[in-house]
Image (tube, rainbow, N blue to C red; front, side, top):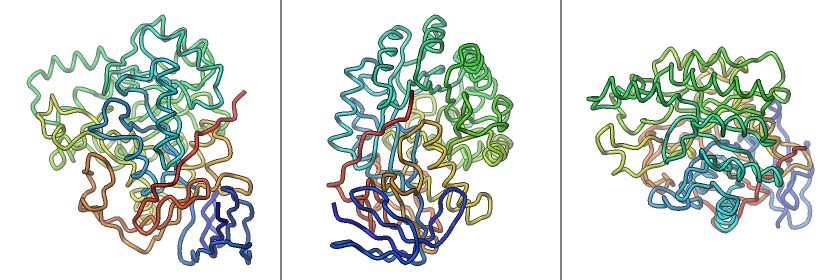
Amino acid sequence: MQAKLIKGATVVNEGTSTIQDVLIENGRITRIGQGLQPTANCLEINAEGLHLLPGAIDDQVHFREPGLTHKATIASEARAAVAGGVTSFMEMPNTNPPALTQELLEDKYAIGAATSVANYSFFMGVSNTNADEVLRTNAKKNDVCGVKIFMGSSTGDMLVDNYVTLNKLFSESELLIATHCEDEQIINANKARYADANDTSFHPLIRDVDACFSSSFSAIQLAKQNNTRLHILHISTARELQLFTNMMPLADKRITSEVCVHHLHFTADDYAQYGNLIKCNPAIKSADNKEALWAALLDDRLDIIATDHAPHTWEEKQQPYQKAPSGVPLVQHTLLLMLQYAQQGRISIERVVEKMSHAPAVCFSIAERGYIREGYHADLVLVNLQQPYTVSKSNILYHCGWSPFEGHSFPATVHTTFVNGDIAYTNGQVQDHVRGQRLRFNRG
């Protein structure tokens, strides 16, 4: 692997932004400083005027493979990820078949190793009947990101509502448990109440605040009873925020939380424009929830920014509201959107890096990634904050071919993405020969 010297970049890392040179050798960062000189056969990259960030780590994506490859593949969505500055992802188990056995889980890792340009990990899936199989994952806990429990139904048929199963996993799992929290009984009652719902504006009324709070509260009670390492995904309501704390460092928390970029950006008012294109679970809700989420993100009650990237075909999304699937493709544009908010003054670029790179690494105990540090894997992204980027059909890399941001101009551009020291994306092109690595975790 050719050594690389990134010269004169504004390095954004661990709360500071300073002009530095960064030397990459054998896939790792070997020196950070000023006035560094290239080694033999070293590729020198002039990064003056550019910002160098640690690659984003997305802890919740749905890349649809195996079985749903008309929507997406691990290869296609990993390409979109690196084009968006995401160098590592953790993918969900609700594929076809779902990853409910050790063998099916390892099948996904094999696909990742063969086809993913980004680094990868895959969650072990849970059903009402596979608790013993899930607990087998503990034997290799340092190379699986966690266990995923759908405590509310979403895409796929993986709802877990058997208390015996839940209690067994919360009491015995050594792995982090990540939950989708929506109360199914409340949702079903709301579906009956709005049986004639015919447009997406009903979605936050059916999958409402009470459904989210009730399920999140139940998960946290189980976790507290068992001292479980719990991570609640895609918090979407103001009411849930009372369940989380900012009174201790992230590394000391046993219960952590994630907010997704679409809940920070869209509100229920946007259904009139986007309709099913922004239909997702949990639902995008009223503006007061969005404002509360922003406040909680900035005061550290919410720990991580992620995407819940969940592509469906354009044709699937054009169906009537009740038939259209939930999920939004986002992984290519989330960093750009957060950099837009940074330029608007809503969040600093240092906090963007904290919530998209540092915090996922800490939360999941990812080994030697998420920071720009000597000795760490060289997962990096150069961004140009002065060069706008307009989303169009020609540059959307999702297999589904559409984005709710089509036609939008972001004020920044992803210039170059490095994965383990390899240039994975540059000048608008993915380098398809690059392969990511399986993430490793510092646990136990």
